[in-house]
Image (cartoon, rainbow, N blue to C red; front, side, top):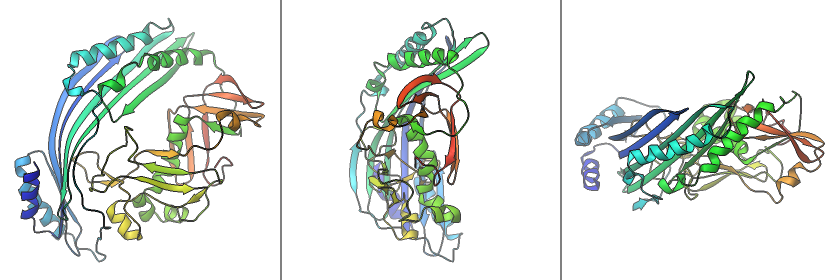
Length: 412
């Protein structure tokens, strides 16, 4: 495959050319209640070419026949020449790499028969169904994928990677006297079969919480001090802050560019936020992004002050900053765009009890069922919550929706 890439690059007449090739094997199993809804295995093969010429825009071509590679390189070159720009596209300089990187498979899922995966998920799903008579429905899903990946560009970078991924989710639905509640537990890793073993507690927790929510009171609307658990905090920082840190959004949206001016204070001195594509085994982890740039830990907020943002090579050059390894493509059918990897809030110095201490009446919000953010305004639905009374966790509550503004929220 590498020889094909070299040959195709040599045939290109564009000023800059990059090629991605992928071969993937995917399997998925789903249950709805006791019924098997699906069990599939699929393969996918294809590639993506981008060409760039001076004074012109990007020319792009995706394809599913590897034998068409040289023709697609020529096509992308032609498409680039068709787009004339007043302001030329520039790419930030990045190191040239030639590497073969295989992420740990953690039990190669390609060697596990589909029937074994089906029986494993069925046993986990049955745990929920048999946990309590009030569990009336379940949704269980397993999915794995292993992608053989190659990347090359005309600057000299040439990469091959093996990219595994596995996900497992459990939804339990409970009903009692006309009241219906649901609870979700999920897992996602850059790993394999080993990661989904010993997950019985995950499925039992979903069932137990769905049942417990039946009797839980609804939270009373109002203004409260709110503490987020790690799951909801992760979703919160991803949606409400992370997308504003993606430089394509910041560059193209004047309001976002103004709000995300480096040096602006957005939180207290204990707040540090980052994005780390190099962290081990997490779902957003990869050694290189889809432009061949090494991933890294990019600090976005340091002690409450904006200090960085996420870049592709193009946005980094536009804004005079360094590429951060955040150019990501959904697959070979899509171009890379600036997107987060593993976004986090750094640990502080204290404990959860320290956060609760001193709050006479508040809410500890847990999990995330959905939400949205528009610039600095946000609204999120928690999976469940607990009242905070006199600095201690108290009763379980439901229908917890938090809303506010990043700039004005005291917690920020």
